[in-house]
Length: 318
Image 1 (cartoon, rainbow, N blue to C red):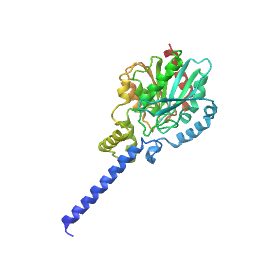
Image 2: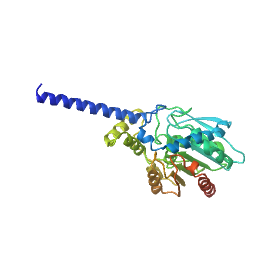
Image 3: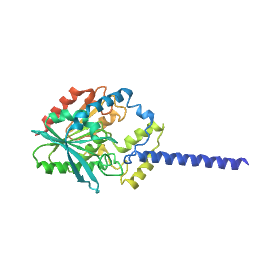
Image 4: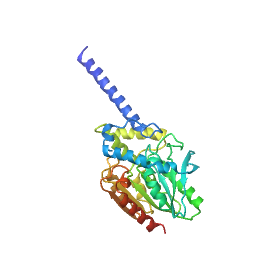
């Protein structure tokens, strides 16, 4: 075999390997948003959560029993694109307000709110805990990373506003992707009953959080990979990763937002909440929970968190 032929064969093998690797990476990114198909998450990324946080997660799971034991009304509504969405409603006596609680990516309402639900209920809050599309009992094939879910949040807000007939304030509260969902919804035409938003450790955009995860899988994920996966998402799920962002939304909202983030969050970087806070043009407040990991702000800073929530409600209930 001459050198030229050997070079061409080697070049072909390298090109083929690169194409296969690229295709695999694109498919991996796409798996992140497929319903109930949680992909392998790089160990380097999981390490960002930390062993201490995993211990806390187990402790939190033990505290979820109260919420599991409550009798709730199952509610179903239809999304703008024809999906059946499911919520779980827990009213309280002498309610002062109603909270719509939105869980995170591949999460559920028991895990994300079980540890705070009893406190919220005792504070005279009706609780509507929703299953985001593609989660729990809600339909859907793809997770929208907030881009699609913002319209679902709007639908739930409209439903509760009509059901309560303007009798009390509404608040939207979310954790992680749930926080992104409610913040993205903030620029939509929400009912006037929505008085505030509580956004705990939300990210700035789908593109940013996907890049964050991919940076743990590969040193340089490459803009091309993200764009290719985004194009695949547009084809299959109906949206691109750069189609809309939390930053876009909070620059165009009039609804007060309480931003919350743990200073030790290694899953969604704290700087994302700081960027969201800086971009927000409505009335805003910021709570940085010292030493708290992802979604751990209430668990690690309970007194500070409760005090901030009470003050936020008192200020905006009127």
